[in-house]
Image (cartoon, rainbow, N blue to C red):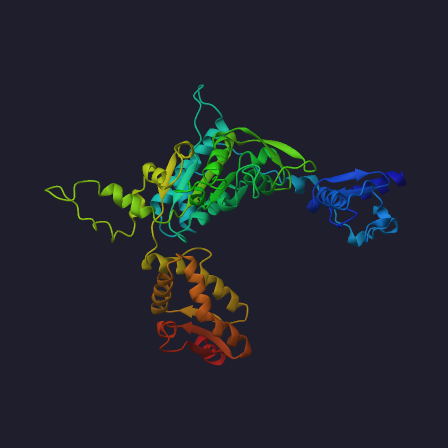
Length: 457
């Protein structure tokens, strides 16, 4: 009876890799060898690579640096404090309710949740809410009266810092599905240095804790998709352009793909698993620089003289000309028709203006200024901003032309001295940032704790 109890107690603890000392939950599936030796796949791969480099024909632990036989410690001899306890089955699975039609938020509910985090972009939020809702209805019902519903993969076009990635992150959080975000810039044609197209699915599988069934209902966001456009006027092989678009075709449409588990590329030592991409939602996004010129050329195709003539500079001052983007513009940019055909939902995001910048500073649940207020509240200091400060920060950020990302850089610049000086003086109870301070013509308003206490009394 005692032996059974001991065995049960040992099952509560994870096994370690003998070489890197990582537990099985972090290192992945261990390779079990005789004499109670467990090695993770990564260390095994490195070991074989070192053998190949030194022309070693056999495994001799005594000749390997820092790896003598005496250094192998049986699992039983590892102190219990150093062991990682296994997660209980109910904790490991955390069985969330099975996704049903009633559990999916309706498009208006999804947009309302997006409104809490994303400012502006009303059209984009409406499009993505409807497309995601229709996609997961398709996934759950599978078929409706033998009518097969096609996938609603999306292509987002928008300037940098307008919220493309943030939209996708928020949608995945609302639906509680695995999300993989990857850059198209690292992808190359199979057989060349770089990531194969299957690596986007490897990241999704990792985000789903290597649960294939869960990964097959996830979302993949491929950013910087404009970087794989066809290269013009080149005689060399386009291994990171059109070839990558061709490689993504079968994955976007839906196919059984062999994916390496825990690695970015296939090799003999990495186990493979098969993922069906039929129910995976693919969202592609990119800034598509200079596509505005292509759109203007299409809109100005009418004669430049006569009664129906258009001025050539008619659209030069249109900040949101990207909203008029069409598939033919993207073809002209360098995206192949077969690729665009697998991304039926096309929409553009607006440029951020000063009013939207001010809203981004104040309104979202995790607004940047709320984060700074939280940081200073931990020191017992109340941080406030007046309306002129909001406007001044927004104007400075607009000058950087990097969208909402410029807000953080701008605030960091002006908050540096305050964040440095405030912890030095325990008497400061409130700091008010003014527009004059942002513009460099004045300073912040400091109020002492004693004065605040008298006011509250």
